[in-house]
Length: 291
Image (cartoon, rainbow, N blue to C red; front, side):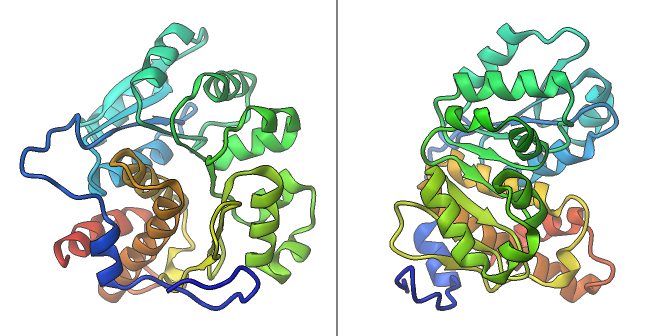
C-alpha cells in the first residue's frame, strides 16, 4: 500500500510485506555475501552505543560488523560482542586505518556515542569525504553537523539521517514545537531540501525521501521504547538491511517497522515499564523466526 505525499495516510508493513522485501538468504551464502557494516562511534566510556548498533546489525542478518571506536572501549566491546572486528583510535587518529575500514564497508553507521569533540569532528568529516557507500547518520554526528553546517555539502544522496525532534531542531534551526506540529510534513520538507532520507523519530516515526512517491508513517512500537540505546538499535537494524542489498528507502522504512515490532514483542513479555534497548535486540530473532 502506498499513498501520495500530501495524503498523510497511515501506512505500515505486514508480515507478508517483510517476506517480500527482506533480502533473500541463499543456501550458499557466506559472510562476504551478506554484507559488511562499519559502525563508527563510542567515545571514552560510551561503549554501549556502538555495541547496540553492532549487535542489532548482526541480528538483522549482516555478515560482518566492524566497530571503529575509542581505545578505552576495546575490552568491553571485545567482551560484549567478540563476533565484531574492532579498530580503535586514541589521542592520535590513524586515518589510514580508518580509510581502510571505510573502503571495505558496504554500509557505514556513524554518530552513536561519538561525542562532539574535535577528534569526533575530524573523524566525521573524513568519513563523509571518503564514504562511497550508503551511510546512516545519527546522534552525535547530527549534533556535529548542527554545529558545522558546512558538513551538509559532504553528505551524499541517499544518506539516511535518524534524528529525534530535538536533534532535528538543531540541524534545521527550527523550534521543536514547529517540527512536532506535523512530523511527516517536516520530514518530507527536510528530505527534499537536503536530498537525504529522513527518519524523523517520534511516537509515530515518519520516513521521507526526495525520490519516494509516498511518506511512510510507522504504526509499530510502544512507549516502552523511549529508553537509552533504542535509537542505536534502530541504526544497526537499518545498516544491517542496507548491507544485504536493500534499497535505502526500503531499508529505512522496513528497519523502523521491524524495530517497533521487536519492541512490541519484548514489551508483551517484560512490560513497557521494564523495556530496555537490549530487549529490543533480543526480540529480533523471534521476528525473523516467525517469517
